[in-house]
Every structure is written in structure tokens, then in C-alpha cells.
Amino acid sequence: MSYVTDDYYKNTFHGEPVDDADFPSLSERASEIVEEMTMYRVTSVTILAMPEEVQERVKKAVCAQIEYLNANGGSDMDNGNDLQSASLGKFNYTKASGTSESTQQSMYAPRAMRLLAPTGFLYRGGGCY
Image 1 (cartoon, rainbow, N blue to C red):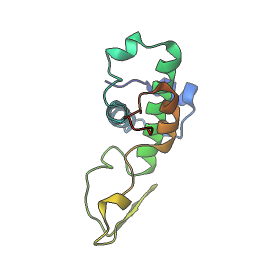
Image 2: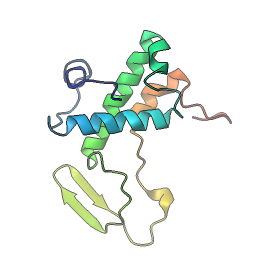
Image 3: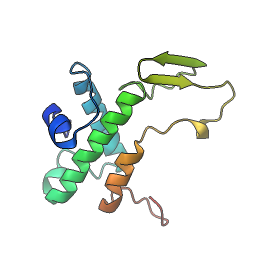
């Protein structure tokens, strides 16, 4: 389930332009990633019981994730291919052979993480998020 519409993304969030044909898949993927990021504390059911301010933060986090995915190769960003170098439009990816997994680019948009931080949904225990 996508948490945002194209209209919300364009007119409320004022996100970077996304092709109309790409928006549905990016929105769906971004919503899935935000659910994963919050350890499934945010779902299509739980969001309805959340305060409006929290719902707005979730929507903005999904929009930030859409921007991030669009700027970094689209909804298939996490396929895990070990490319040496690739470039197409906004997307640019290089991975040297022998590079460890810890240096790979995160699937989570830094801005989405910052938007969700005050909600407590990112808390995994141990004093960090």
C-alpha cells in the first residue's frame, strides 16, 4: 500500500520531479522500505490509529524515500548486482571488486530517517536508532 499520492508528492511535499510512469512503482517501493525501516510499526492498519502529526511524518518520509530511489536508480536499486560501473541519467553506480558489504549504499534515505526519528519508530534498543 502506498501512503502518498502523486498529488501529495508534487503539491504538498514539493519533491523532485519523477516521471509519471515511474511514480506508482517508486511510491509502492518507498512505502515498503519505510515499513521495513520502522520494523513494521507502520502498516496500512496501524497508521490509521496514529496522531495526524505522525501520519504526516510517515508521508514525508515516504516522499523522501521516493526522491532517494529516483535519484539512485529507481525502484530496483536493491537488486544487488555487482557492477563495476554504470551510468544512466541521474543514476551512477560503481562497485569495485572485493568491496565489502559494509561500504554499500544504504537503501534508506537519510532524510526519511531524520523525519522518522522523533516518532520513536526507528528505535531498536541499546540507545541508538
